[in-house]
Image 1: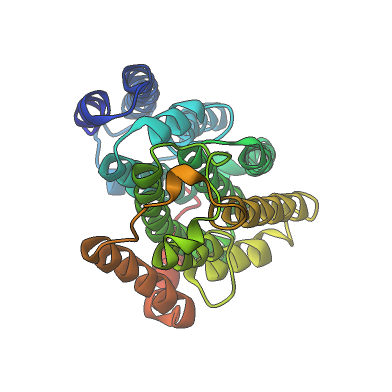
Image 2: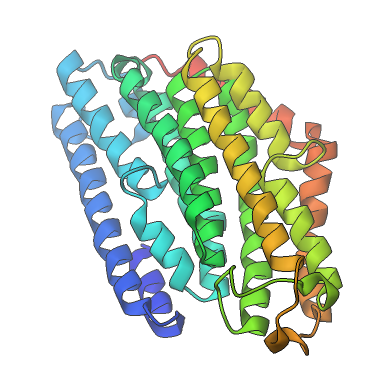
Length: 347
């Protein structure tokens, strides 16, 4: 349902390459939706009871081959939305070209629908079938985290840096879904909430920086802490939130995923953590290149964040800190839902 409105918003209010990004987004979204529809129709016609009611379909017993096929189709549909490697380019292009409010929706909300679908459908309703190809899912998850981490190091476009950071977090969510362990799934849900807030904060701050400098090139920036003191402080906190610094919301999610996934995947989990460290290094380098060093002459009259920008970004940062310091606000409800889902997910 969101494909056409998002396509129009990107195409109308995006950057120079907005049309290419908008058409790619629409094509990939339609393809993913087509795979999702195919999975639903196969399930409908193969089930003894002809219904779309997920509660009624839960207790249906399907042949192993059929259940595995349906689980694979659901996985592909949600993985495209997440996005994972190699289906990620639509998201990176859209994130770079969309206007700030649209990019916020893309990175903060839209990709989380893929994570929700994976956990709710593949883990919740096809747990046994998912276990049959969990190894492949783990490989895709690790490649997604490492690829996005390496890509962040190579990026010069600030908006694309934000996109790859989000993609890295979604790779961790995929690892948790493949593990299907309660602790890891708790972490995945917390990380999706935290990343939604962090992505929104990064997108808004990146948009403010790009607007003031007239460029999205990180190399063309430098020394902006002297002109944007408030913006520099907020960006540093946003970068710390993105890398999972202790005391901030992302740390809780990443820690739970690592603890929950390691017993089942003793090689994949450390490899994913290497990707997390690479992203952390890339974010530190990005902060240094934007805000410190020599000041470009063209940036001499840059103004700092305004009242509305400060209110929005500080509000998001406050929620990130609150969930990092008091994760119990959400954990009881999340854990109850995860345990309920797993206890009835063996069908």
